[in-house]
Amino acid sequence: MADSKSPMNPRYQIPVATFKSKTVNLYHYILFFFMISIINCVPYVRSVRKDNLIRVAIICGVDSVSISGIKDQVFSSECQINLSSEIPQYFTSKNGFVFVNKKKYRGNLEVQLNNGKIWIINVVDIEDYLKGVVPCEIGGITQPLFEAAKAQAVAARTYAWSHIDQYEHLGFDLYATVKDQVYRGFSCENELTNLAIEQTRGQILTYRNAPVEAKYHSTCGGRTADFNDAWPGQAPPYLKSVKCTYCSKSPHFEWQKELTKDVFFKKVRNKLASIGTKIPFDELIKNIKLIKNRKSKRVLKLIIITEKNEYTIPGYYLRTVFGDDQDPGGLLKSNYITLKAKGNKVVIEGKGWGHGVGMCQFGAIEMARQGKNYQRILYHYYSGTKIKTIK
Image (tube, rainbow, N blue to C red):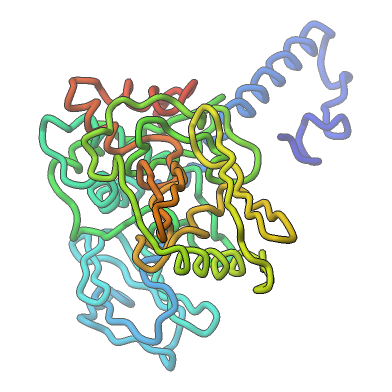
C-alpha cells in the first residue's frame, strides 16, 4: 500500500548514523514498521472525511430546477435555475434543511453542470443521509422488527463508505436511485428508522479491516446467491451463497410468468442483441439450456441452441434477456428460475426478487421477528465479517 514516497522505500529511510546507538536505531525501526503495519491494516480509515460528508446526486441531467436555501448569506425561496444561469452555485441550509423542487433535504447543495445539463448534488452528513435511505430500502418497520432496521442501517452505511469517490469524475459519490441506494431525503424519514441509525452510529461491516461490498436485495427465495451469479469479476469471500429459511412470507418468494412461444423467442432475440449477441433471423432457436450453480441454484450460463450454432451467455445477463417492460426496471425478478414448455407457452417459474447477493431484506425482517439481533442477522448473510465503528 505504500507509494514511492513512503518511508517504506529505502531511498527515504533515515540513515543509521542519525541515531546514537544501534539499540535505539533498532527500537525506532521496529516501532516505525509497527505503526506502518497498523495503518495498512485499517484501509477504511483512509475513506473517512472531515465531518463525515457524502455527496449524493439527487437530480441528474435536467434543464431547470427550483431551489430554496441560503446563497451568499441570503435566503432564497424557490430560486429558479436554468441552463442560462451562472453555474456552479452553492446553497447552504436554513435550520438544517434545503429544498429542491419543493422536496426537503438535510445538508447543503451544489448546482453543477455535466454534459450541458444541470445536476444537483446534496452534500450531507452520512448519518443524515441514512435517514433518507433506510426506510426507503427496508420498507415499513414496526417495533418488533427494529433489529432489521438496525441491520439495514449498518449495511447501507457500509455501502456508502465503500463507494466514496465512486463517481469522482462527475463530482459526487452516490446516485440517489437503485444505481446505488434509494435516497429520498426528509420525505421518507420516520422515527423508528432514525433511532436504528442513531443506535448503530458509525458502525460498518468489515472484512480484514476494510469496509465490505454490502450488497442486499428484497428476497432470496430460500438461498442467497454467490457474487458471480450476479456479476463478473473477483468474488469477495463474504458474498457466498447461504441458506435462508426466513423469507418464505415474502410476496416474491415464488412467482411465475407465462409468454407465448412467439413472443418469448422474439423478446429473447431482441434482448440478446441489446447485450451484443445477435442471432441471425434465418437461425431458428430450437432450445434453451440453463446451466445452474449447484449450491445457489442460480443460472450460471444461458445456452441458446439454434439450427446452426450454440450461443453461450453469462448468467448475470439472464435478467436482462428474459425481462421486459412489465418487470421492474425491465429486469426479470431474479435468475433463480426454471423454464417449462406448456402447450404454446413458455412458463418461467422463479424464486426471489433482486440479484440475490448479500442480505435478504425479507429474511432480515423475519429474523428480527423471531428475536434475532442485528449482529446475528448481518453475520448470517455476510460470512466472516466483523462490525466495527468508525470514529
